[in-house]
Image (cartoon, rainbow, N blue to C red; front, side, top):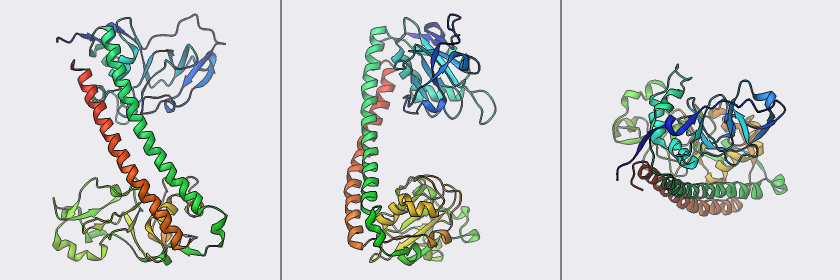
Length: 394
């Protein structure tokens, strides 16, 4: 089937002007850039008088499509539909382009078109401006050629993509709920009146060994090889769970020099450089590996403290967060070192209660892994449908 192609400015009005009929006393929807998520949703809507926002902001009407123009918001997919807003018109950040579909173009089809990764890839390569302040110019949008099937076919394609996207969101939400449940279990078991009678212990007193990785000339970047003994860094713990991301290796011979930095199964890793304060438990099936100087590696006395408890306490316990000067869990810490970590103190629950918590964490972890796999499959399905939709194969 031959796919009809049209220039976007032939079927869409780009950055339309505010009509003169709008009064200064009218109330409009207001959307700063922060109101639009990378999931293509509007997280909140404010109301402002036209007098407040008619200068210095971008005008749009309900039903228009907003697309971020500035890096990195554009590359991250900040675009949204405004059809569900409460007011008939609104104003938003000047870093939005406004797209208003004409009679030949379905708005939901247009949104899916400009929200997909291929469009962002092409748009990013056409950005203008200085580094850090690059923007997608309106001229690029005007001359952009888009596939334009008949209107009813556009609506069919948009409906399929919307359903696939809704499935992705459900999978993602299920993972978030499991994470929230883990946090709730920790708070219920350990942040109640009961812990007041528990003895206070420091992290150092709970450990068999605490160490960072090799410094300076002990391990040079030039000594990394393509395969051998893995070297763990910030990227392996930055998501608060252990992940294999970038692979770095040293030779077995080099490992013999650095054997004292070996990471053991069920060690606790805490990032102390770069993105400080992230924490992960090393899995049971870890091969022989060492850690870099960017991590504090803790081997716990298993008769006193379990890694699941220490990880959760480090990330969520109010006492720990206060000692670290962090107001909310998940915050990035400005500075951290092994001395600070050693001195952290907390109420230590009986090992039996920690075991019960660890079992709950493992059960939820199995469900979470299944959820991540399902979310990954939904992502792949959505990407495949997008490709097929805009190449005339759907």
